[in-house]
Length: 367
Ligand code: ADP
Ligand code: MN
Ligand code: MN
Ligand code: MN
Image 1 (cartoon, rainbow, N blue to C red):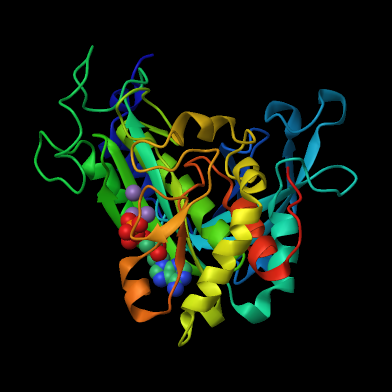
Image 2: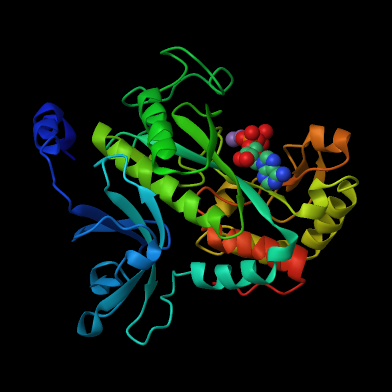
């Protein structure tokens, strides 16, 4: 596959982006497609700068081209749900996260936000907070990890996690650009680091309350894809991009309720872990878009994971399904870390599952 980014001169592009666009605003509508993993986007002009979601019109797209509808009845509705500043077009231009609805106004199969909002509404008095650690891998356009020797492998894992130096980390420009793009857009990005496998990175988003977790993580994924596109590099959210002795990629989900954060909260953390232990299989089905099949490649019991078939929990234990951070153990309050969600999980499905199990005592409704 040719690398077209190099063919387009970014300095030439800048000339056109510097043209005054007047009062009108460009709004890029963004949505999750029929894969439940990939994002799509398209742009429209708004005559005035939108101040809130209420100023944004419902729109539509051809769902037969995104795995979301048949050609004979193809229109899918886009309902704006969250608005962010656009770090690419700058000025008053906006990025608009949308939910997708079918012709009969029912949610599409991959619209898991609608039920997530309803569940978060029922649980709002507990103030559920989330912080997700999004791991991902940079690939060249030939789908080999970015910066790896053309036909082979780098030296074994060890020096790469939080590494520095041209032989330790690959693609830092993308990581830095993405971080600033997130800050500009208004994403609650919390940090970033190089991961255990070379060319694998992580960023964290949070703490976010309720539905905000899914909204901010999906938009942060969009920004990452969009930034990497500028560099001609591909982002993979596959949970085990390279088989063998290489770490997989997850979406560790840090979670607390108000009670867990208050004095003596550890009791509530332990209660939640007890509830998780009874529905491990159900959560595994919710923690990747293929009902556990993606995570089966990652959760092997090696490489800082617990085996997919067994549930475990422990203080500072990175080989457990659920880890209580050392500091939380010492303070006797704080949060827990669910290490099971895969890097390609839908955060709406994951956060809904966590709240159903730990707050609402309701069975999961699996996609
Ligand atoms: P790790 O040690 O597992 O690599 P990180 O530092 O990468 O952990 O991520 C920790 C995440 O936990 C951050 O996203 C942070 O926002 C989140 N977090 C911190 N406190 C809370 C809390 N009380 N409830 C939920 N999430 C939290
Ligand atoms: Mn981390
Ligand atoms: Mn990590
Ligand atoms: Mn973690």
